[in-house]
Image 1 (cartoon, one colour):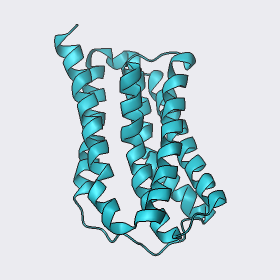
Image 2: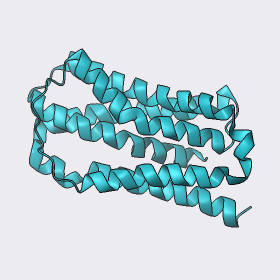
Image 3: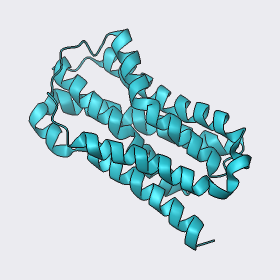
Length: 193
């Protein structure tokens, strides 16, 4: 994957964090830096750890399915992107009743928003990422982008509320980015090699 693809992938993955952070910011109503930084750091940390875990798991058996690895990477990205696109059209109540600063809630949201990143780590192994040095840059970028997008989402939710946040369709755009990256991988392996 090129540097641009890694940044786009990181942005696509961070859209879940961004959407959840907007909702949390709406509930917070006022800037409270300590819980906001804890939430953003936790989201970024989980978004960085999960691809590493997925990669570690998958790299041990990726050589067995080398001939179809591009199809698997495409399927994972298309499924995750498609699910994000589908969920972006669901009507949800913008402000749910929960405390977004509770450690239990932050942990649960971090895990929930990073499950997609676990699958992305698996696709890294199928794309031939074999060394720790090669995986380090993508996971650091994913973690950093998720941290920044989470902070932006929190601030945006605090400042703008439900109406504008719903119009952004962050999940829709994140899903489109993931599907396009999956298509690019598939086209490169089928037609450009």
